[in-house]
Length: 113
Image (tube, rainbow, N blue to C red; front, top):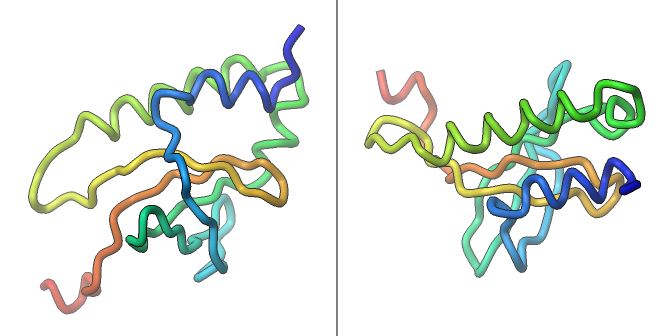
């Protein structure tokens, strides 16, 4: 039987960004943190999910993987000039947590309003 982290990599393989480097943490929230991600010379922002590795060790890991894959499928299909573009997934080198990578925006919400 495949271990949960390897299975997650297989499940998310269509969305994996190759040659991506995970940088420093920008901010931290309750369920995730914002990190810098650089891929092919372009800087992006990534949402690193906290405690996912721990949750994957428990009995509901297939459900969590399915929900995460579904979220990636939905995000990749969204295209609109006013939405931040989903780029793909990388895995944290420290704890193998998935990081959902989005395009980097240079303005704040306040300045856009």
